[in-house]
Image 1 (spheres, rainbow, N blue to C red):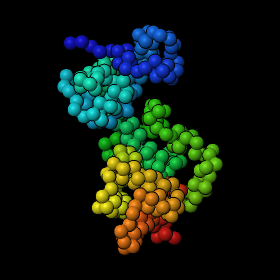
Image 2: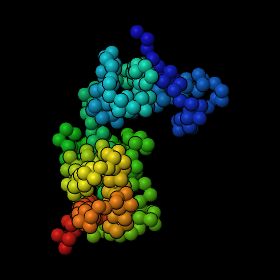
Image 3: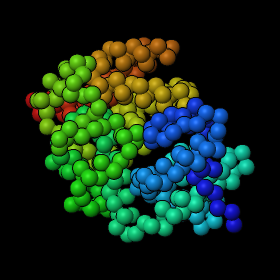
Image 4: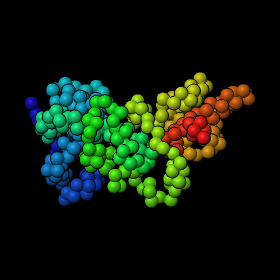
Length: 312
């Protein structure tokens, strides 16, 4: 059975993309010689154990799909193929649907033992937790992050989060570490965020559930909020296109999350609506208001306006 190599896999990229790839890994780029570029780049990636690093950030479903390929089975899940292909772990073509793990990927997988696999799970969960930093906290100390990390019973509660974070490629997270804090890049120095930083001082950290973390990680906005669900159902009942609606709801939630005014959010949403009656208009505005006061906000460290009012 033919063994497909990483160098063959890299041939899928154009020369411009390969040039950027070489820059990222400090590899010599040779104009007009794609074979030489792919060979040199693959050697550097192997030397730096990049394939092992990428295996170490695969979620269970992607990792299981890769194991199926290595066993000689096929994958019917396009999303999993996109993940594995995007990390250069597999070689093939969408045209004929034939995909294979590269020789280097198989070798890296064969070296994974139980301890390494547990560390992969720990690392992936930390990446998922960082979504909360991105959307709700912006700046979280180690002890706060540990409280969230330990919500997952399948991970090692004593894991070194600083070490795990250092093993995540920069391209896979919007966060950085400043001393013992996980911080959105640019958060502490940006004047744009000055008002948010000041407002946050009045609040403790809201610690979400494991379900909330996974929802935010996979959907990139809160799809579990019952008030947001009511707004979605209102639009669907009115005949909105589901794909266009997802974009609008995401934009509305993001604006709420970052503390935009209710009026500006409503105005944007109503630019898509023609009301039949004043009752219909009033019903929609009440639903948006309820969502607005219950949406979690970054300037409140993940709390909502309704929770803040209760506390006061």
